[in-house]
Image (tube, rainbow, N blue to C red; front, side, top):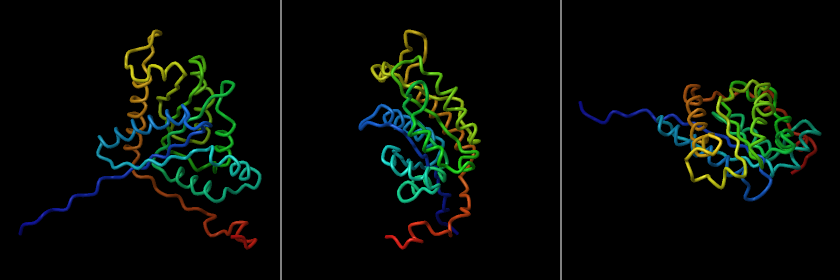
Length: 221
């Protein structure tokens, strides 16, 4: 008996990219996109199909404040939180203000369920004006996600203003540090390897899935 033996479908991995860039365009979004591209390339090389979902926190500014006041995200914000928490890996990027992540970024993290990111592979990125703020990734952003018990990959990427002027140059900087493209590719490999090793994300049961929203209880549209 002859015939074509069906092959297994390629495993699919979803990358959720969440960034707190304020401008359009913004260097924060640019860094987030490049990190996503690098990770997706590595995952494809490892034999995975890849879906990238981008969440722009600037679009949810008012809804995030509402969720902080009521304790319940609604509408598009709730849908994007679902996308993030059910992804196979997250790329989280924030601009730095006064040496730490932005208020918008922190407010969004504050409305997440405390267990939502447990074990989640996370790649961190940040943008700022000067390389002097590079360590903010390690003393502010990394502890934040470690507290949430996320699996934060070792490599993180900070992009200063001067890095973008040399973004197409792979030579090392004058201080001996790796170029931005090198750091992005290294980070992408790190996240891709972690996601591939973790396997497909198992969706958590939502204990409040059957609970009507305040809008439903009030008979709103």
